Amino acid sequence: MKKPYWALIPLLVLSGCVSEDNPIPIQPKKSIVILYENDVHCGIDGYTKMRGLRDAIVRADTSYVAMVSSGDFLQGDLAGAISTGQYIVDIMKHMGYDAVTLGNHEFDYGVPRMQKLLPQIGTDIVCANLFEMGATKPMYQPYVIKQYGDKRLAFVGATTPESMTDEAYAFFDTDGTQLYDLRTNECFSLVQQAVDKARQEGADHVVVLSHLGEAESFTGIDSHKLVKSTRGIDVVLDGHTHSVIKCDQVANLDKVLVPTTQTGTKFNNVGKLWISPEGKFVTTLVAKEDNPYTNDAITATINSIKDLMKNVTSVNVATTEFDLLALEGSAWLVRHQETAIGNLVADAFRTIFECQIGLVNGGAVRSNINKGVINYGNVIAVQPNDNNMCILQVTGEELMTMLTKSTANCPEDDGAFPQVSGMKFTIHTGSHTVTDVMIQDKGKDTYSPLDLNATYTLSTTDYCYNRGGMYKTLANCKLVSLEPKLSRDALNDYLKNTLKGVVPNRYKSTEGRITILND
Image (cartoon, rainbow, N blue to C red; front, side, top):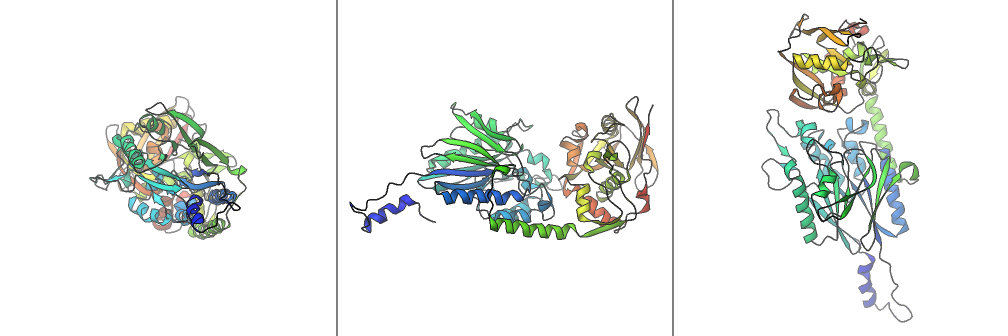
């Protein structure tokens, strides 16, 4: 470790370099600058600008410089999806981070995959509230202390307990046994313990890398409540809600105002925390368009990864002899009527997960499939959102409620409009009602009337289930399983394996699954 300038002064005295004619120069104490990001979500082009900004500050030689991440970097776009996070850590390991905490999307590929990826970053991973079930110590260190000049900074990590719901498949075994715990009820006290221990070990300042978000959560955990419930934290570098917050001042238990900040998402901003030698904290955001700096090595790494991604997306999956239209001109067909492409996606969901019903909201089907060769890039374009698949057990009454609410705006466009498989129904646009709901009989081509008291298995995305889709009508349904497979990969598997690489003629037109009556 390179010694700071103040540590070299005794060596100068002993070596006889000092005299009345050659006095020791008075060195002003340097400030500390911490560059921070949150919710990058695979926005890989921003890494070179962040590292370039760090390099520029180092060259100016007026401050010690650190870089940290408040989580959600492994998932969110093509680079993460097609490499299950590998391409992201391939960039991050060259960045020189000082500390990183976990976001909820670090769990998207499962804990074993996360544990394989994170050590490759080559820095300290901090998280005070992630435990294996039954363990007395957290899986990662709660904090790390780093030296900058004559100051010791502690970075404490905490991540949202919402992950145990939103990424439940990573926390529970297939039989429902809980494997990991984010200690919802102890979250604030675990952070406080880490802060206290860091102070006892000589930390001059404590910076919390928080992936809690400032918005109220169903868990009762957010970054503002964290500050209000603790003492000894100097600043919170927050994430999770994608907010752009230069500085919120939140009073802690001692009524001391603690700065809390977020950068937004995908490197729209880089955060810059300035700590004066006297301990003053100032946060600001540097917009990407205001940052002219880049780093050649990081840029080269990003470009090589883009080449790899191009190789992956160009892989052929299937062929079709006809167009499958999600939109015609500027009109989004999937948002107000049955479409062949909606049937294709819903069939993929139902078939891959062996459910009675497949469901995708029309707003999630985002591109046409044109006649000819279908490559993986085309599949991603149809299902670009990072939605995981889930299996639900739903009652006939819950299905009727979902259909009624999600078709109420028909014939106007609505992103909640259902594209379905294993189901038929009729929409009455005048009365805004749904009738004649039929469910396909198991293993047959026949249909039977919906039984409001019966239960059915339904495969859909976690967005439709509990992240706001379908007007939250499915949020109280029984969750059978939350799958690690993304919706686009379910579609890819269906095209490549189930359909053997050829889109059959039945998708050339619609099949009468949805009847619309203007009465």
